[in-house]
Length: 331
Figure 1 (cartoon, rainbow, N blue to C red):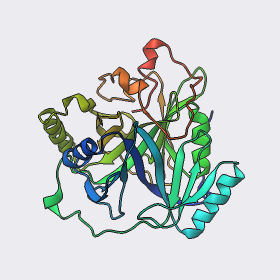
Figure 2: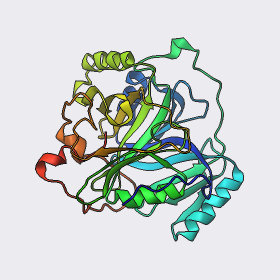
Figure 3: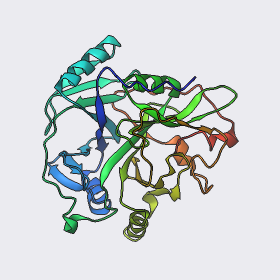
Figure 4: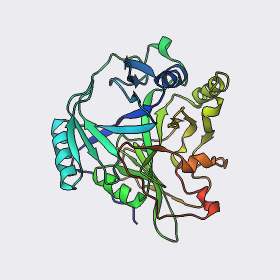
């Protein structure tokens, strides 16, 4: 299917991605991984939750770690422009016949909870508790020195339909992968905040979260994290990289926690704010899409992801042969 034209006047105005709730089975282990090793800052914790923010962020949290019986994803959060946009979002989701509800969330104002057509739990808000800046509190920097949450990447059983749905909400495609034979889209990167993506969709059994990502200052921070993880008992949690993606041009590293949640450490993509920016098309069979330097990704990369609470998994009808399966996923 053709990539949809940018919707510059969407039904409500999403500013950016904001936060994710990860359900983890061992809260103490997760604290050691996300706080002591990655370097996220604790803003609140109790017996069942830990709230985290990165170094440049003024909002109360970008990650919620929630104690549970099995690893999963509770919700993906997005900030909208103002209170009327929340009401417009409610009306829009209702017009699609999709579930919506107003919910109470700690450290946040009004929150609208909804699901997309595949069951992905989403929440939208305007106000989150604001915290003092810490980006110049250099004594707090540790681990990979994460500056801000950057994007989500999801496995989708129907990438074309997902792109059409999120484009209607105002997300714009920056890069995508397609194949000549079917004309179908296998993966797409979509943004609101002016980077390569706030959210991306990858062909596969879904919906599942492939990864969340954090922006870091330089590739050297990624090297430092590799040295730290490889000498402090986290070697087995390094999944892929370091490397450079063809799509987005980003320098990357992928790591996974005890429950399999995948995090990308990410820097060096490019600005996409122009409303008439043409999407970059990549061919499905081009191996430099996912790794510019040509190194293959591990099998886990293409097959494993985190399930969403309350969402039913569906198989994709797009299938690649065994050789091109190593090429069909996103970066």
